[in-house]
Amino acid sequence: SNMVDGMLGLQQSERELAQILNIDRCFIISGDSDHQDRVLDGMGTILNDTLAKMLPEGNNVIVVMGGNTMAQVAKEFSPELSTKRQLTFVPGRGGMGQSIAMQANTVCSIMAERTHGESQSMYVPEKLSEKSYQPLLEEPSVQLVLQLIEQSNVVIHGIGRADEMAERREVDPKILHLLQKKEAVGEAFGCFYNQQGEIVYRVPRIGLQFERINSIDHVLAVAGGHTKAQAIRSYMKLAPHQTYLVTDEGAANLILKK
Ligand code: F6P
Image 1 (tube, rainbow, N blue to C red):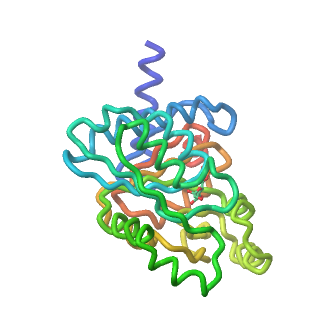
Image 2 (tube, protein in one colour):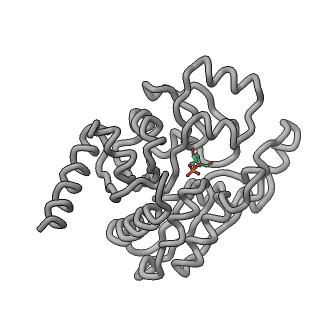
């Protein structure tokens, strides 16, 4: 009965969290992904099961963002997701310059492989000069991905801490200074935001533009660990209402002040 109590307690917390964050739904995996990697597996399984229940039959175009969380949860996707569905995974943005394992392109191909679906890559470097940008935009392969993004009905994304993401993205010292001055706490979709959920800086990039997610049917955010509590809470102030959050107790308990 302890386990049943535990489960009911978690379900109660999930409802409270969704209410506080003002979004449709939350899932909380027990543990803290900052300390235990297996928590990410649990988040991946819940994400897979949730998609299996909610995606419509037929064609689904799923926009996918990068990051370590996304790369880890992708491994839990299963072929059942493709039952009565054709899935196409597309990266929301171009490459990240450094770690290939965390790129949206890589996450897409893992998801496609696990579900027996399809994926499309976008080869655009993270840092691009003004004059290289325009011709790349006209590349047929880039155009194809941009069209798929336009048709998408699902987006799955991570949420990061502003300090970590500024470091990972190797932003210029000038921008770093701005982020500090404006007290950025988090980053998602290339947008840095402050505690109140106001966007303070956007990384200019080809691909999904943040405002577009308001009109996407299913938006799934995946982020956990106590160190991300603030970044998650503030992001949800600008997230569309149809967002589902998959998180863990590490983050949830801090947001719920438990
Ligand atoms: O760079 C892509 C991205 O999804 C960011 O928008 C987000 O802040 C970050 O990755 C999360 O990365 P991680 O899961 O490694 O913390």
